[in-house]
Amino acid sequence: MVIAGGGRVGFRVAEFFKQRGHSVTVIEQDPDRAHEQDSDDIEIVIDDATHPSVLSNVITEETTVIGALTDSDSTNLAVCLAAKTFQPDIRTVARITNADDEEFEQLVDEVVFPERASVKTAVNALSGSDVRTFEDVTGKMEVFDIRVAPESPIAGQFLDDADLPEGSLVISGAGGERTATSETRLEAGERYIIAADPAAADSVISAFRGE
Image (cartoon, rainbow, N blue to C red):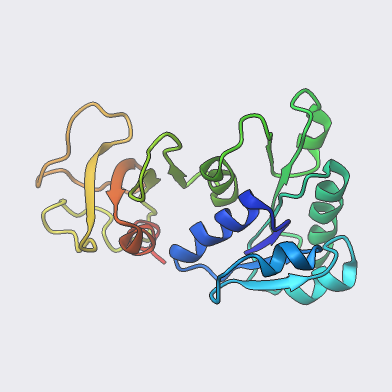
């Protein structure tokens, strides 16, 4: 994952995904802002993300998503469009100031508007539709709804038999009709609400997605 813009939201989003076990690179033009961050686990590139040479160096075949989270709409759009030239299948998320400007939504995969944005809003935009973190949950525990992939080893298993990580709990189906029990079957293609400690979140997501 690549994040352009190392402000408060940018670095907190990077830390969120790093806790989930993702490799994250942050591109930040301001050296002072970059040096303020105390994280040995996140790669920080001090440069201008709009320069093609910078993007071509940080985007690899394994890069699946880029979030342009600077305070400039034009910069965010330029970064997303440039990223597509290096990795046509990359998912692009742009922070856009004007919530009424729908034309941006035609050029990037998802738009995040500052007046509604929180760290978890940006995380959801970058994650795509298969994993959605609940935005109003306080504290460090994650609560999210996630779809069981057909190739997941837990697909078709009863909850009592599923080998889920310690520190995680299946609460219910995403519809919330009933609480999950030991006899709840994890059906491929269905969504479930999960609570997990931060250390267990990545393993839970991997189990449900079959990664």
